[in-house]
Structure formats: structure tokens, C-alpha cells
Amino acid sequence: MERSVFSECEACQGLPAEEQAVIAALGTEVHFTPGEVLIEEGSRGGSFFILTAGRVEVLKAGQRVAEMGPGAILGEMALFNEDVRTSAVRALEPGALHCIPTAAIHQLVLQEEPAAIHMMETLGRLMVRRLQQRDTDLLQRLGGDDPALVRSMEEFGVLRRRLLSDWALKYHALGKPGKLEIVASKSVGTAADLSVAYSPGVAEPCLAIHAEPDRSYDYTSRGHLVGVITNGTAVLGLGNIGAAAAKPVMEGKAVLFKRFADLDAFDLEIAETDPARFIDIVCALGPTFGGINLEDIRSPECFEIERECSRRMEIPVFHDDQHGTAIIAGAGLLNALELVGKPIEEIRVVFSGAGAAGFTCARYFVTLGVRRENLILTDVRGVVYQGRGDGNYLEELAADTELRTLAEAVRGADVFVGVSAPNILTPDMLRSMSADPIVFALANPTPEIDYRVALQTRRDVLMATGRSDYPNQINNVIAFPYIFRGALDARARSINEPMKLAATHAIAALAREPVTAEAGVEETDLVFGREYLIPKPFDRRLLSRVSGAVAEAATRTGVARLALDPADYRRRLERLAQTM
Image 1: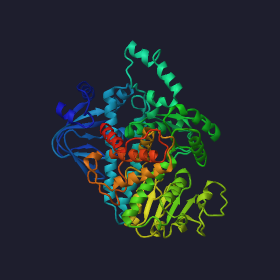
Image 2: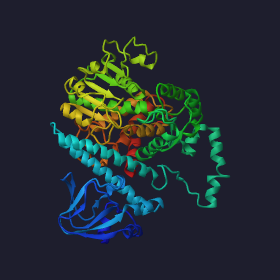
Image 3: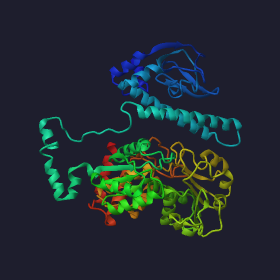
Image 4: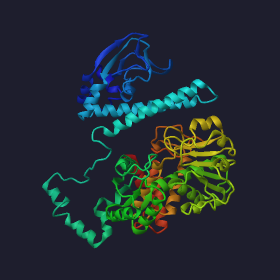
């Protein structure tokens, strides 16, 4: 294969020459002529290809979806689809392919060969991007009642789920299984280093901390270390799957802390479902961390656990399933109301879902300005109304109303927020809402109403979901890393309501600003509007804006141990963001 073409190939970029040679040695050169079908859709295939010369077209159900030239990867989706081809490829001119058997790549991955692991990671990333592009293309063709288009969307949905499921398993097993490792921040390469990293020199910081406990922030990792803690009783949309099965999610959370806020975190899965004992365990771990992120704990126990841990500990404790969702949804609500011109104190809001996220989000909307009498909460039993006899936390938001069903409650409403179950908001319900309805359908992976169905039903709908492949994702990663960054840098004793409100307003304000090169996001055409209510997760400006606002609020409300200079702190965060 031409070395220049191999180096330009997306799956091989960044590989050292010796690793490129490893991959090149696996394959053989195959020549083709114009009009030749190189890959048949639906056929079995045990190879993928690097196009080294010529041009080809990619066909889906006989329709051209792409044209590709030298350096392109072809047939890679068979790696994640049990060797079944998802598209056809036909030659447009004479050319050549470098054919690489998938079995050879799999074997090298099992042997932890760096070149194969790099290529598999790149091919997985490429596959996801192509799926997202296909989804976008289908969305852009939305309109009318074209049965063929509807069928294509359904078939594509099945394929996408299968491919992503397979890649998710491969991704977590690549190289070192999981997503975390421990890396030393100080040199221990010599006996001299060891004498201060451990015995006898380590006694000095120990004695200093014993004399003054807050010196732990100066001499240990505590000030930039977050504990991500769960008992696995309410994991994502999976439910009570237990502590061990929750570990992939907790590792992922720790990775996000590092990627977006340069905070170290490690996960603790505690096999304890008794709230009192769980609280004791978490509080006993307090000296280890600068903050605690509680995660995936079922309601109503999560309310007591967070409240009691916050009371007993002198560090920030934050249950992200409650407050992270509320903070981001609150920012989305403020911006959506700005676009449709509706005052927050006049809108009618209906919630579907009264668990930790739904209840806390509803209560937070009241803090933002929604009038209590204009808010209705629903659950599997219908409207949560006064006199229903719940006898628990739901009594706080029970409505004084004769309405009993979601369909009744949503009629004429301005806002629907779903943190519940798939497809619970029907097209008829959406039609019954007020003009310019705001719909936050946050059930994941299947929303309360499908994004495409909602747009087909009402063109004036302003829509957000919990998914990354549709506009306006309500994504907690826009909040929790930056809230903890600001709280830990200020050495806050807690995360209070003003700090949460500061985060919401900072996030909302950032979405209204022009997206400049400073943001560092791939999308360069983002403009505040119906399809851009909330900053993108990879917007580097979130670090300085949100963390800065949180730290200022911590100082203003008296929970900060350190008083940071706001302008200097934001400049430091801006510099940090450029290095991440």
C-alpha cells in the first residue's frame, strides 16, 4: 500500500510507522474496475477495506448516500454487526483496496497490540459518526406521511441499536478493561524520591494534617478528588441492578469529571441498600474526598441519603440524578421561554415522572419562578393531587385540581417535562398543548415522544431530549463537573441553592452568546434558537463560566473556605480549558 495513503487514512492517523506496518502487514491489495460491486448490502463479510486508489459510491437500499476517495474506510460496520454488510459499495472508476480480515484485527486486540486497539477505537468512533450522519439525513427528509421513509427510519433504528450495543461492549473491553487507571502525580523514580513520597518523609504532611485538618487540601489529592458513590438501586433506565453492575456507569462518571473539569474521581460501589447503613459508610469516607457525587440511588431513599450526608459532612454532597437534571432543564426552560416570549410566572407546566429527577426538577422550577399553582406532577397513578393519600415526599407538590390523568393535565399546558417512560406523550396530547409548546422528553434512550414524531405532529414545538443525536440535549455533563470544580476550588462546605441557581443562569447565558473559536466545538454554525437552547457539552467556555459562577456564589453565601478573586479565578480556568 502507498505509505502516504495509509498515513492519510483516518483509522491509521497518529500511529507510529512501526504500528502502521503491523496493520499494513495484515492486508492484501485488491484491484477493481468501474461499475464493479465491491460490497453487497446484507451479505456476509469478514474484512474491511482501506481505499488506496480510485473513487467509489456507498449505496443504501439502492440510493447513493456517500462518495469516497483514497484514504476512506469501507465495510467497517461489519465489525460491529456480526459480519453482515449494512451498505453496498460500487466502483466509479478503476482503483484498489487494501483488504484487512476482521478476524486478524480481533486477534491482535485480544493480544493488546496497540496498533489494533487504536484502529478498533477509531473504527468504532467512525461508525458512530456515520450513524449520526445517517440519522441527521433522515431527519432532514422528515415531513408528510411517506411510508417508505417511515419504514427506513424504523429499520435504521433497529440497525443503530444493534451496532451501538456491540460497539459499547467492545469499547469497554479494549486494552485494559474498563475506563480508569491510577497515575502518579509525583516522581518516584529514585530512592531519594521514595524517601519523601513514603517513609520517612511522608510523616511530615501527616503530622501537619493532624495538627490542622484543613491542610489535607494542601498536601494530598483531596482538594481535587471526588467520590462517585452508588448502591446500584436505580441505574440509568436499568433499575435496581445492584452495586457491581453499576460500576461501568460510575467509571464513566469519573471519566467525565476528568475530561471536562480536570478533577480526579474514583468510583465506589457499595453493596448496601439500607439507607441508614449506607449513610454511615459514605460519611465514614469523608476524609478521603473533597466532594461526594451520589449517583443512581432509588427514591425516596435518595432524598434522605443526600440530606443526611450533607448535614453530617463538611464537604459538598450532590446527588446528580436530582440536581444535575434540574439545573440543566432549568437553563433550557429559561432560554425556551425567551424564544417563545412567555413569562415564567404565567406558564402552565406538567411533569411526567415523580422520581428523584422529576420531583426535584419540578421543585427547582418553582424556585426559578414557576407559580406553584401552575405546576402539575404526574406519575404511574396519574395526577399527584391533594388528598390522593401518598403520605410521602409527593405531598409537597400535590396539586389542588380536579384533573386526574396526564392527558387531562397536559391540555392547554405550555411546558411538558418527561422524566418517566417511553412514548407516554402521544401526538394527540401534544396537539392539545398551547401555542409554541415546550417539550423536554428526557427518558433515555427512548423519549416520552420521539423527536421526529413531535416535529411531524407540530412544527411549532420547541423540543429537547436526553439524547446526544438530537438537538437540545439535556445532558448533566454540562453541570456536575463544573459545579464540583467551583465548589472544590472554593473549598466549599456544601453545594447550596444559590450555587445551583448560579450554574443554571451561567449555562443559559452562555447559549445566548455567539459560538466563537474559543468554544472549541466542531459545530461552527450554532446560533441561539429553537435547535440550540443549551451549550454543547464540549464547549470549553463552560469551565470558566459555570465554575466561576458557582465559586462566586459559594463565597457570597458563606460556605467557601477560600475567597477566590473572581476575575483571576476565571482567567485561571480559561487557561486550564485550553489545555484539556
